[in-house]
Image (cartoon, rainbow over all chains, first blue to last red):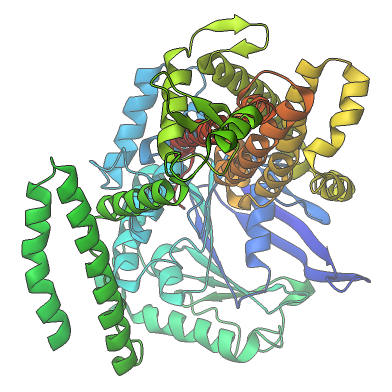
Length: 286
Length: 351
């Protein structure tokens, strides 16, 4: 049994025009092992953020459910922390207070000193030493998301959910923070589910990449195994022979096939996603 | 550009001279004139430049605003003084009979040296009193600020205290209740939409319109005045709090939900601080309307206070007293308002 199981999750939204319902996605089933980094990629509006919110417990699925470590996880909880696209830092709190709010809740029996030491440790880890008492308004986008990451890692969640975490950060800073994320993840080895638009980011960070077709009634059409060994860095990863194969494959899917929802050629048997692995050359025929 | 350069140079020297001569009022006056003149010329040349460049450059504003404000005040006081000045009584060309008739009518009085002067009692209600008369009245009132002469004749300090405590009681009670209700409505969209028509109807009703009903119900003018303030203050805060809470960014609540805050923590650490800027805006509107309501409430109910002072001075036909009462209302308002702004500064944040 996998560590995190997204079990036949279906989501309907009521139609904004009133009558009827729109199916966002149907029967999404994802199995994630402990310590795995899985990314979901797809066009805007395909429902990938909704899927992430359902895992986080912030939205309820119409059908199906989330099973984490053998138990159903319904409703939000400290075991599934989200890093938000627009940071979601409380602007009336300092950097320290923002992180401490989460730490105090995660470890309610800790003393003030323990909380303070823990928060300081994570602030140092993301390189924000000296900015403890600044408010988010005084920070750049990159620094804000570093606080977001520190907050998420500080409560040591079972599953880390990244919702387009670097979409609002400029391209140069983005690369730096991506590598910081790799380092933090190397130390903590949380299970991560990320949602993104950015193909390079997905390849750099993930073990597996799920390709989602366009909505409505989106589904996970393909599952690409990133056959590039870790540790990875932005510089070396592009020299790996599989890098451009994977990249082209994904872009090819996004440009040509996402709309039709059939992936590369035929859909997999019984509706499960097509497996793509360049390592074992087990690509389902083009 | 040439024209602006030419104007800036002499101004620098002028400003330093004006600042060096702070001590003499006449220099204040000169500086005020200079400041105003400078502002006028700059305004003219700036609009000129703007016309030439098609509105490319914004007008720069320099000069000391305090000098300008002081200058306007002095100008106002002087013109007030001269427009309300009455010549002293001139008995030349009047016969003894005419003088006796005037004295009989009470227009003039005989002064100890045998000549006549305008009757000071009648002077009070002929025309508008000048600034000196108001100043004299103010000195008289302030000198006995802490004296209670009778049941309805308390010193100005007492009156201010009554008004402020009446205002504070009504405003604080209204704010607490409005914020509590507003949070409940803001968190529940259905309740908010159900309650909104009522709030919208209640909001524009003048708080004074409630007064007869309130007086009839509570049968006590003291509490009626507090309740009028309450009625003035409750609706704007309620409406804006509900709005502020309902438009709080979803992510804040999401974070609160993920880190499993209890509802008390959620309320005091996330919802209230997050909605604080909007709530403070509502409080500010409430504050203004409550301050406006407290004066006529005191007048109509005959409750001791600064609003009552204005009315009692009118009943005494003491116009200088009325003007003094108006000034007191203004000063009390400014002091309360600046206190409120201090408070507001602590709870607002930048997004």
